[in-house]
Image (tube, rainbow, N blue to C red; front, side):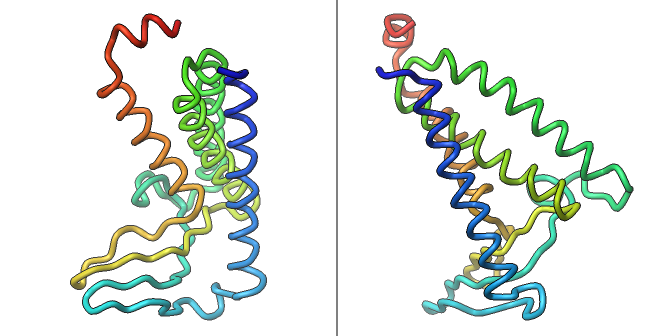
Length: 167
């Protein structure tokens, strides 16, 4: 495999760029904070909307708070986690793992930028079905979830013997 650090960092940078561009578009062009909600797609009981949410916590709004340092503390924690992931990335043994780690790192940094700029993360994708709404998310959140799923899948599916051969 080519340099796993380079592969993962390039992918992280591309996801970070896509995340920040989508948030700029939502805030500045669509002006979703003013409009709050825009229905996009309705296929029977399933739908996709743009819905403005300022997430002051982490996934599903956990640990949200309005304290003056809450967003900074969450940003620092995310940066520390990204640091550990960078170390793991430098030793990734497959392109799949490098890309998955890059997705998590790029997504984490995208949300850190929001926390430091706005004091909250810009969330806007609202998927719903049969009256039930999944949490509202953004490109960074999707990258983190997909990256974690890929890492778990790699850990569960790849035989132990192949992991030892790669290291």
